[in-house]
Image (cartoon, rainbow, N blue to C red; front, side):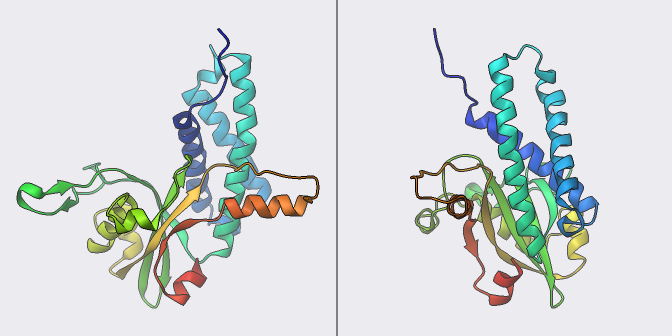
Length: 243
């Protein structure tokens, strides 16, 4: 029977997370996004894409030509998302400090316990990226989540006590002064830690509906609007400017 040939959202998410995490980590090692030009960034993106194909897809062995075609088309989307991430971080004072921070990995950090007695819980999960900004002797932290699905940040959810995972990550780091984890502990270095916010970063290239009157500039603006970050941020002019 004929079946639609498409990637499932988890497959796309795994690939996007892989390239974004590897690229941002390598750029940090090279001095940050301001120190890496677009040519080098593109080379890194292509390198980690090829690495993903080799490690996770077994170099397309046993994959159909249709799968290869769809994957290659997806590669253009990955570059657009990496480019968008770089454009933001080149302008910002916040910089990535840690990646794929696993709150359930006892080797990385002790368990984060919430509540007490019979109602106690242990926090688990992975923060895609933790950014920091040094200001007035303090370390401001924000937690960034790469979103490859259609779900968006909702203040209504927060008010109802739902979808608090990102905020739990942020305030756990704040409560512990970023001490439990090596990279963040070194970044804090005894400084007071301030929770600066949580941001959802769209790791999808959005589709837009056009008519014949839209110019290329209009299309770019419409795409950029859909790629805008969503989240909850500290109401502080200096912090918002630094972002």
